[in-house]
Amino acid sequence: MSLFVDQMCLEDWQQVRSIYLESIATGDATFETDAPQWERWNQTHLQFARLVVRDGETILGWAALSPVSSRAVYAGVAEVSLYINAGQRGKGLGRWLLTHLIEESEKNGIWTLQAGIFPENMASLVLHQKCGFREVGRRQKLGKLNGMWRDVMMLERRSQNVGNS
Image (tube, rainbow, N blue to C red; front, side, top):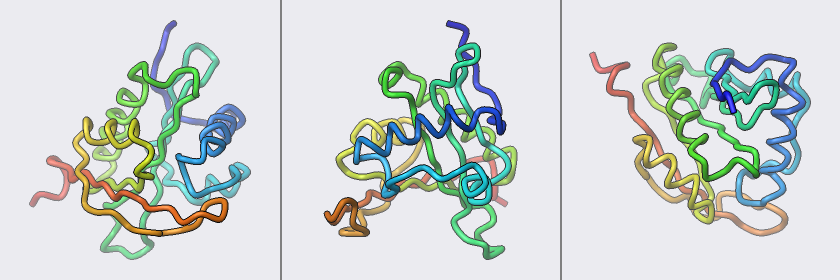
């Protein structure tokens, strides 16, 4: 394996979407029930910090940021999306990718990263906490997924390098 983190490009979308669909199918990764087409995904994610982990031509995981608001006061706040191929989970790729995502976010002026994670998704909760995120609350019955109310744990990471002056 010759793994490396790289910027996501349009040509990666089918593999990225496949990993997203695989994660959606678990029922514990997102409220989404289908992955969008490229055009929609591209419109809803920031242009920077779109990362993939590659093993040659194969993408093993991806991460990206979404704005939390269009208001100028929140320009330095973004929401994290991170998904790893099912066969590659538990090998440290998520931590490696999230660490790179944090670095890229800070290079681009992001001072707060936030994540909303289902409480049943312990692996994701632990991963984010290992990367400096802290739990800020639990939103009870935030939304329904497949007819069932789901709680969401809210986590955030405040940069030590951006927005401290």
